[in-house]
Structures are given as C-alpha cells and as structure tokens.
Length: 94
Image (cartoon, rainbow, N blue to C red; front, side, top):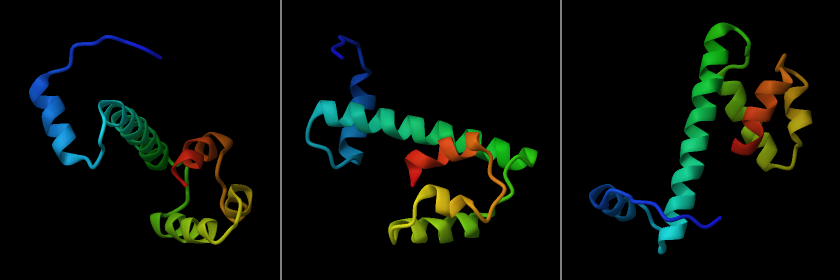
C-alpha cells in the first residue's frame, strides 16, 4: 500500500536510531508489527486476568521451546484448556 503521511521528525529519528533497520519502509513495518504484537499481548493479558486463560507463563515458555523443536500449535495446546480465540492470538507470536 502506498501512502503519504506526515510523521513527527523527532519521533521518526529516535525510532530509527533505536532500531537496526536500514530503510524507512522497514521502520514503518517493524513499528506496525510491534504495535500489533503489543495489542495482542494486552488482549491476552486481559483474558488471562478474566480467567479465560489458565496457562501460566512458565507453561507458555515451555511450549515455545517445544514449538521451536518442531511441535505444532495444536500439539502444544492439547494439555491446556485454551480457547480458539487465545490460540489465534498466540499463533503469530510463536
């Protein structure tokens, strides 16, 4: 998608300096990815505090290690009572 937008120069310079990207496009893409990741985590945290999620952070980290070893998301979720909504939120982060 092409767009012409006005971005605060100081904000853009600081973000560029803090990242290890080489182009403006990479910085915008990274920024959008991080924004989406943050919002998904906030939503997941809200579901966790409401009782909709019963998996602990330790269990989630253990599952991430299993996933890196080749397990599928379905394999990882079998031992835990996780809703499909939570699985959809977690999938992009694994």
